[in-house]
Image (cartoon, rainbow, N blue to C red; front, side, top):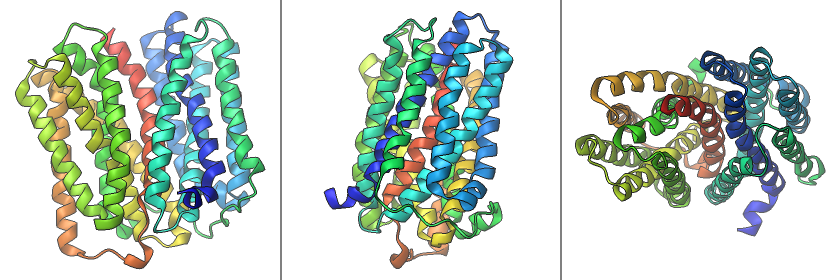
Length: 417
């Protein structure tokens, strides 16, 4: 274990600190926007601006890495991302905040590209599952801690913006002072979605569909709980249960995917997701407190790691020079799904009620299982020599889903209110 984590220890520490700052911002900004009486439309525009910046980061991040290398890009994006919360606290205007959210989205998209390609290169085929299982469990804890930091000071003050900035700044130190060698600058980073699909159809489609389902979940889960119970605390318990379930399942699913194949795990997790979703739909609104939380834990356990497995599967078929391009492309695929998913799921919920969220999820997971089974029949054996462990995927899965989670949670809270 120690030997496996040593080459990426500094990066894992940096990422954990960064995500603590990101978690704090994700909770602080919508709260402060409400205190400042920003119009709901303005808050929605800020979310859209974040997505725009994130998409641009996915498109341009690879070029930056190719030009100046992983470490310099990491430090530059960290500096920009650290400045953003300070300016948020100084310029309390919706237009300024929208521009800052776009900048933050761009920075974190590029940071995630650096992180994912770096972890992929420094992990071996035998230890990636262990490395990133540990990573996800650590960072989920730190993200939760970052969100809880909103209780330290009054959100109406400047203190929480300062803490967010400090956390992001501190995240650069372990990488800057690390003696571990950084990855070589990639020769080819041009984002080519057709090429990405040719490298791994199942991985590409998996990222898109997981974005659809998980984006809808993070956006509308509080609306789901509000539709089945008048207890306003249920949303927090339900989301916590889902996160805990996802954290606990990372290690066993990583181990199984390393040993027995990604696509088998993708199919199995998708089918279990269908069973859980159908159970929620058939139960209607008759869901007790404990049952709904068990439902949330089960859903998180099978749904959250799916993106990670999809990324690992795609990288199994990628050459080392493709890692940056693949990371960028898969992030973009997830992002597209995460933007579209909530809109489609909201239509389901308008038609059949709160359980429409899981009706949509059941359809998406069924499509994923069917597609992966189809690909298994066409390409029956994975390349053992280039088999990439689950670890890299976990980094990608967690960071990407968290990005969209924070923004969608803001809109979901507005809907509940």
